[in-house]
Image 1 (cartoon, helix red, strand yellow):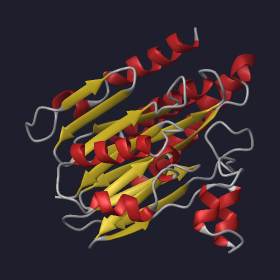
Image 2: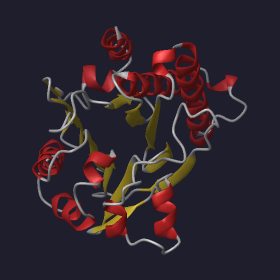
Image 3: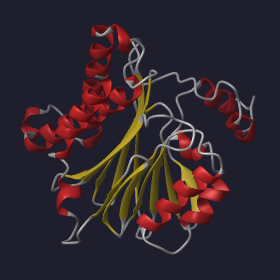
Length: 288
């Protein structure tokens, strides 16, 4: 029953994903899907991958890539809730964000503030409403939620909105910078100097989030804007990647030559080689 709900939501999304179905600049997109991994590479400069890993029975992660004619929308969601509830939470969150962003693109005059940050906040508000309403309405879904990050690229300006611990990094000039902060108690301990980054990676409470879509106490998403330069690389990933690989290991891959499909695959494969204890999702982009 739960699986069919997840597939129904994902099926509705397939019709909205213009980038995947049409490709970029006439390039035929690469699509691969199996019970282990789903990959989409609309061009050599953009790729999304989600992999179930080695220890989980289902994949609570999900991703989305699309274009609205003005900019590109990329989303990674990492669901939680046990059984298939996490899968459903991440699917509902992505569907709501895409729906909201698509609607405000088509009818910008309906918005009091048509700015991208405002649209992203509205999109997350809709996702919060949808996931929370579903979890309240069905006892078996009680407590489900999803960390999520949505990035909208408008020319050379990258707008990022997130709650939870899905991360966005930018590699520029060979230097990797994490431009988001995790919404977790462990991240707060790191910022206060109580824990080192390495200690946090193995802390028993590292998965406990202060914010996630669907939490009854509500959300307050962070918004970041970053101007990209030619050759900059953007990495969006779930904790299945960044808990498995150090920043130095991630940097080593990102500075390498290759298409984003090749490098994203290397990142996912190395996370699996490191144990694959969680679902792994990666979106990788190079600014042209």
